[in-house]
Each structure stands twice: as structure tokens, then as C-alpha cells.
Length: 114
Length: 115
Image (cartoon, rainbow over all chains, first blue to last red; front, side):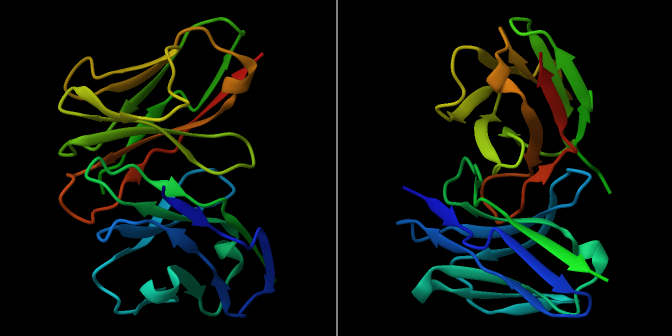
């Protein structure tokens, strides 16, 4: 069975701090895809980043970076120099099959205070 | 940039009534999905739809639920006899195809309130 765990329920930081959101996934499939979505207070789901199981290169995109480690089944997401507008719930999600359904974690509520 | 659109944004319905939630996926996308999110909880998969038929459904998607693509653009979710526990945010999503790592693009959701 597939599962995504986000152990951090809530995180609170002060503006300009770096913050890392943890995600651990479970799957027996060898090919899978991992995603991070942001859900601001307005409620929509916004795609942020994705990673393939066969590509462990970690990347940086603007203030976002991610650390994918197959050995520990983790896909952590870091926001550098956080801003108040980053306040939202962040969901990690896993996709394994061709049908493509997403399996979401419980979400981490990030609060960035000025 | 093309986007998934959902209507209405908020639907209030009496328990036992039928409700239809509407979605217009991105035009060149081939896979369509419905998810729901009960307030304060995680997003849960309901059903996926491809080539005019259901490709996968979850345990939540029981006989009270149905999906349809009545024309070339709309994708609807029908709940036949709503229950209080159907109150949730319902998200529609679409994706280009199944053979890539392309993400699902979500609509802004329909908040369904059952009284």
C-alpha cells in the first residue's frame, strides 16, 4: 500500500527564517512521482514542485529547494527566507500508477509571522 | 495560463437532495479526477476518469456518487442523496497524460455544505 506521512502538523517561523517541511512516503513501486502542493487560506491547491523516483538530483528553484532521498524514502521541502505570503498548508503527494491518482499526506500548516 | 474551473464555488443543499458539481478541465488534458477535503483534513482521492470511463475509484466513491463527461468540455460529479458527512471541499483536477511526470492541475474547489 502507498502512504505519505507529514509528521509536522504545524510550524511557526518568523519572516526571513528558513523552514523545512518533512515528507516520508511508502511504496513498493520502483517508478513513482512526488509532488508538493500549497493550499493558501483561500483554499485552492497550487502545484509547487515534482520529482521522479529515478532522478535523485536535488534542485533549487528560487526560494524553494527540495531534498529527495530514496534511501530514507523522504522528500523534504525547504523555503529559504520565508515570507508572510508563504503562510499556507503544504501537502506532499505521491503518485505511482498510470491512472495517476495522488495520495496526499496530512499536510503541514506553516505560519510565517512578520 | 489555462486553468481548471469549477462551479459553483459554494453549494448549500438539504440532506437527501441531489447535487451536481461541475468542472471544466484544461482543454488538452486527458485524465480527470475528483478529490474531496473534509474541513481541516487531508485531500482524498475519489475517482479518476479517462477515455469516457472510470479508471479508478476509492472506497469513498460508492453508489451515491457518479461522474460524467456529458460533452467535450464539462466533467461533473453527482451525489444522488446527500448526507451530512458529504460536507467538504470538492476539487476537480486534470492532467495531460499518464506517461509523464506532469502534475495534476486543480480547480479552486466547490465547498459543499449539507444542512
